Length: 525
Image (cartoon, rainbow, N blue to C red; front, side):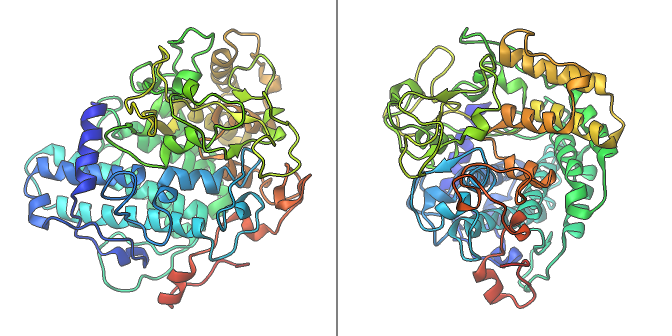
């Protein structure tokens, strides 16, 4: 099923029409129109191809593969891929990563000194705006097809993807236009409360319209994905709308926990832990797929991009690292981590996958690759050690989980500690399930007495590092901008310093503000 979907995504990405108005969020991504509306929505089978473009909008970057016809202008195409932008904004800005490249605006992200014209904050807004635009068009046109119930599943999936895009817009930019229809009018600005309510209501409505958990083809979302995103939404509600919804978080986390998804415990490569299987080239078949609630599918031949896991693998290789061990032809010598992440791991915790040979734990200056430990978490080799499909070693097969069951375990624990009414015994048991996998035995297990909010935050970092969630977590704990939690070069100071609170969110793009008088810039920018 993975290969079917990947081939479909590839074909549709090359030649795709979506009759959308890209002004939905007042942006102008490059329009990939090449068919007529009647062609794409002539039948349910054709509509499935258009649905694939919505998934591809989070995976790929244009119409020719890795580069050539980008669908986002004014930035290098490889930079513009969604999960690469998510890494830049939600990981590179935190204690989990630094990058040695000097592309304009990139060093400012870890230094927390970005401006309102930062290329990367603008590109992410454009990418998410495009996803909303394509989804709005798909929903409108697919609604006209009443051939069979399968089309209704497609529409529910499109509504999920639109809700996911708005979830990220709300998290990253706070007050953005909210549009669920195609319109040529300049949109009005909505606030976080309005966007939160929209995302919540959409997910609640579609939870019973999506296919039951585990019954959809791999790579497409189901009912459990709606529950999981609701769990994440409610966990952050107190930050976003000043209203605690931890009870709701516990409820929907519990729904996910009791679903058909399960933590991968299959140590397919026999190295003593089943954690690394989550990030190998065969993670769609080695057991990891049982944990992936929502994942981006990559294939080194059929879905080529310089973002995604191609970025995560290549960019983390440098120094004395052997690229062949990672199934690729070379490293880009950019990404490393800080000692703040490294020191969270006990030596027996096999989730801490660090390359230390030739690397300094202490970072004196960010650009040299040797400054900071390297991360060896993502690989383009399968459980038998074989490299991915691209024999040239350029592009990677490894899929990237955006939501996986382990996160929901941690959501349940945190919401329970914050007064959500969950069972701390269950929370402890679920965290111990993760730690048993991490250690390969029960020596790292904890008791309920060990469970507090800071432990959960650290466990989130140990379990989910480099998966695009760290900034959101630190904001929720009031650690992102304050001096309550410092890391190397936070605020562009070697030992770290606090920064202005307005940096808990990113600026709206200047090009959007200049063309839409209905919008007001976020405070501080």
